[in-house]
Image (tube, rainbow, N blue to C red; front, side, top):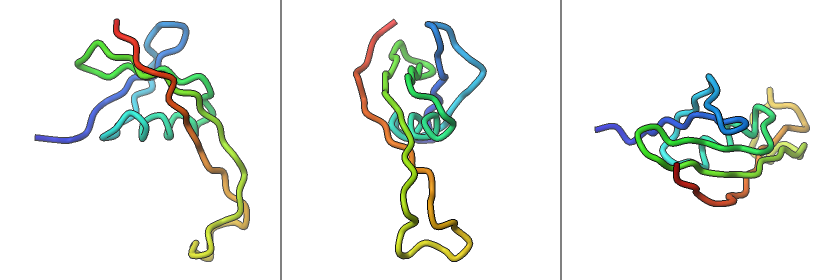
Amino acid sequence: MSDKKYFVLMENGKDTAQVFVSKQPRGAALKAATRGHTDIQLRERGTNRVHSFKGWTEVVAKPANGPAWLPDKIKKANVSKNGITRL
């Protein structure tokens, strides 16, 4: 049995066409934040749960052990969980 879960991005209380795949809701939220979403509502497929996150990105220096092709400044996504609501 597979560990991955599917999370549908919601906007204004309605599902969008964007689906993020991750084991945990935080991983899916990080993917959404990387794509520029700030108020993230993720509906977990197959359940009645909606995970709420606040997302943002920061421009930071590349890690010391980063590969040579990586630019000096990179965009890093961060999320903070607001809670879970049930439909």
